[in-house]
Amino acid sequence: MENFAIIETGGKQYRVKVGDHVWIEKIDGAPGEDVELTSVLSAAKDGKLSVGKPTLKNAKVLATVETTQKTDKVIVFKYRPKTRYRRKLGHRQVMTHIVVKDITGV
Image (cartoon, rainbow, N blue to C red; front, side, top):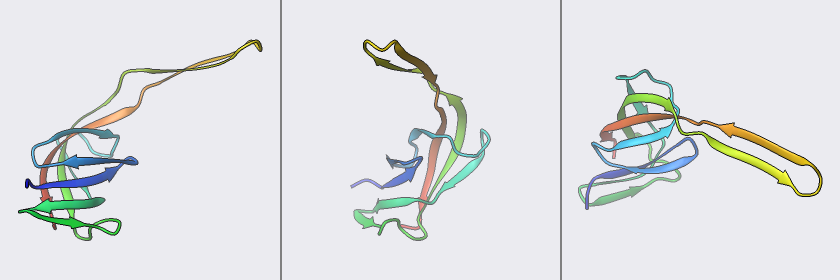
């Protein structure tokens, strides 16, 4: 069994291991800056799985911010037939690209 952690950020859960490149919803941090993700739901190290209730205390995932940028545009179109109702909106989510450096406190 490999070493990994399941983290929660931006309302989503990600399974990460050391060296992974992950796109997550925007977090504060300049490119090249180190960040700590403390919402670790579960982690495995040396074949031992630890599960939090709901999170693991003292567990952290250390990562480096690579870049922050907007994703492709998503078109939202509302339409009701026979009523002349049409609404067209666009949305671009801001995402942060991180590289996982270490998983500690497991």
